[in-house]
Length: 231
Image 1 (tube, rainbow, N blue to C red):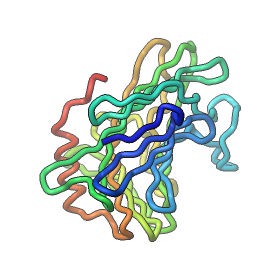
Image 2 (cartoon, rainbow, N blue to C red; image 1 turned 60 degrees about the vertical axis):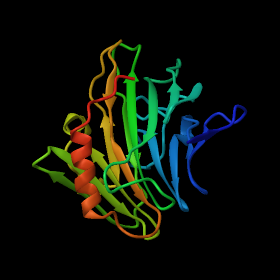
Image 3 (cartoon, one colour; image 1 turned 180 degrees about the vertical axis):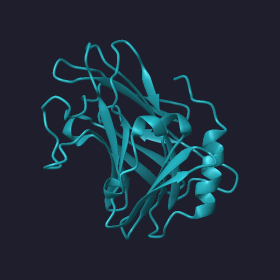
Image 4 (cartoon, helix red, strand yellow; image 1 turned 45 degrees about the vertical axis):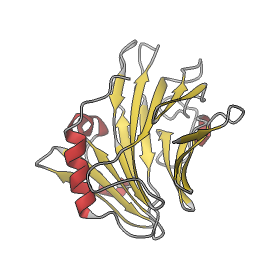
């Protein structure tokens, strides 16, 4: 179940028995972070590649600030409305995912991140990146049979894999081996009033081992076999 506190908006945790998976989602320069051991997997706005620092220049905007948070069943709903100094607003729904042979426990988890983005501007190219911590082992693979893409990262103490379904691969751009630990969502021109969605699945292992290939294969089957949520 999700643990939240009314006086601490932007902090939540998914509890499994006596362990938790903590999320900080304040937005702004802090972005959204899923903590895995001493590291964090972050959802951030597009960055200035020359300095790798968030900028307030057009095209390199920080995220909108979190405005609303609530829990519905096993879903954590977060709302980041557009403000005058931001190109876009977005909603994020986080839910744990399980399938036959895989269940969330103290060391392993899979979360679906349903991101819905929109703008009130006539000319906007909003972009979000999932940034994976990786001292070693960052790589990208395309799974031809399913049309999916998998980004792998291993920082030595934990491992992560981001799965993009066929509907999201096109919007993430071409594979760039030098930036394998950064998973780009959206980035193309976004028309005013149009809602665009992405649904990456994030598999994490905080026990220090890599993500097993059998989990990747089963997750791809589950992802491609499930409809895109409407909420």
